[in-house]
Length: 580
Image: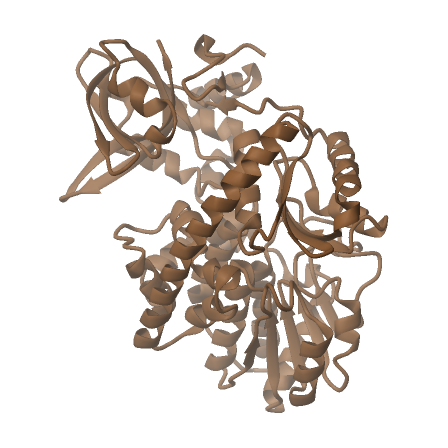
């Protein structure tokens, strides 16, 4: 593969890869056919959007993209049981996972039930003491005091705990990969059941819960009644979809697009408090969901009180929400410190083992189980390989993994569990969790590496930076950025467009904070653009550009609009550079 602009080794050591010949031709043809800006057409072509579908793609609507809830198995009995519990004033418990998807799923149900005049019990297991998903003692206890237990973002593989819930009906609303048999629940609504066709496999759990509530609304209307406004709940669905790294395709794009609009109205006390404590002073974007709000919601489940995120999102009291948001912000800061320590140790170990294998993994004594998933994600991003990070404690290790596009990690983890190499394990394509005996660790990781290699893991360059094309400073306008944003939201499965500005002169540059770089650049023909490079001095970009000595550079990154003091200016979020 020929490197883009001849950059085989950028300042960060990466090879630059441009659009394929096929994508370039599709983009050019689309631009000629539609009259839309070439950079936008190039982005749409890379996303696989045909020219005839471009206009509709840029304006995704739930009306056109929302699937019929009844296309999922067990949907009608699940919704009917929830409505029957409401009608009979039965006691309802919600058993939720401790991550963002679990918290938002629980908050959706709590909010909907509250609007229907019913208060439910929330139960979120402790990550360290109880682990992921339903457990026998908790389910037995809930069954004694409740008539209906709804498991959200968990439960599909929980045969024994669900069987232990004697005297209560159990409904599972999940998206994790199912096994060959289902647990003994009244209903299991899950697009990743073995007997589903996979058409909705990209939904997160909160989206599954949303579809159940859509079905509840349908059944209420058929009975001559009305349910709550579901469109106002899409802020929670959007947060879960992005934070759980669900691919932003099909209905997921519409859910996130509309959810961001709802979030911008600042009507949910929990999200308002969280946005304020994070000092979010612009309209929310998918970036804010994934990297600003999501980590804070997650912090309670990672290192603090497991149910804090769900309770915040379901709160209707601004003062209560503010206190919980402050606590989550503190926990998130603590989480970052713990993560930094584990990340340094894991990366050192992984480098010794080799970063070019189909699987990159590390395991360490006492590594906090609340951060191993984040560290795995960081290593995955660095190496472009599936990554597993495991914390060892006694005879067992508990770990978490993150995958790359096109490699189904959850299925491979489940295969290992069925072969007896893991105590337990499961997940979905992009993320999975596992528990392994210390004595089987090496064997299990070797087997997992083989399984992932058969799916193509390790074939991509560990240091490839993919680019959508070149832009000159004069072409980078706020109007172009607004057009590009219409092709979003961007995230998993739909990366944001990344452009390179070739042969640029460096204007002023200054260090910002401990490690960031602010720089101005142009092509020598007039217009200049500001750029920000976060963490520039943690690597070679900061020193190289600061000491440029008149040298010119190719500068690569993502475009954004910087709103400051009432002015809207183009800014490049600089990710890499190479001498011109």
